[in-house]
Length: 304
Image (tube, rainbow, N blue to C red; front, side, top):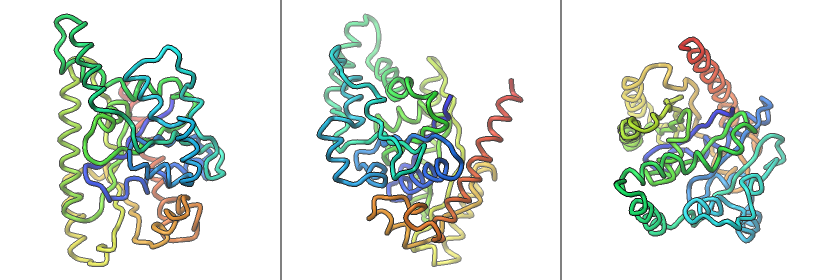
């Protein structure tokens, strides 16, 4: 069974998508892993980091995006023609094993979700709306990806900043989460908020089906402010003091203009500029990622 990972932070602009697409690309290209990138963010940054706007427009016109599956989950259609396998783009960026389930700028209608769940709560006599909502939240993404989990080594989900339905459902479906951060005070606040909310999410689902998700690691994606030396080292130290060493990535991603330039090429920097400092850092971070996965699997086997 594939390992399911959410890349998430409460704050936007911390390098979440950059980490997702470059990690996925290195896993496929240099480690022969089969990897699916699932874009859960309506900003579709992960999608446009792997395919051009022209290609995305074609996918959207044919309804071959995540929104098709969400529509069916919210309003089941017995005449549904497409399955999840039909929506996945294979060999993106000409990398064997790297695949994408495109996101969409309009993923779901919150009103329709509330209406559907309210109706279900009324039909299921004695069931509170909150419990019906919690169950839907827990199984939404899990059920969508269930048919293809065994087809991949890794499914990496790029979650929206904040804490909307899809982000919570993505976290609930995951084995691990990655937490990208910049050495800035607001990024630290985003980490603290996320940790509290994941703890609350676990507690909320404790009585139904306990969530088995753990932090795989915090990765520092350095912004231009990283040049300010001492101050940013202090912020990084505060983060390191709050977590165990094994919860942090030793390899950080340096400030590198090539990472930003690659976005304009709709290609991960590890492909567009493989000799850049940013690319080399992502390659090393991916090796560390695989080590962390192996250690966690060993600990899981030992526990049983």
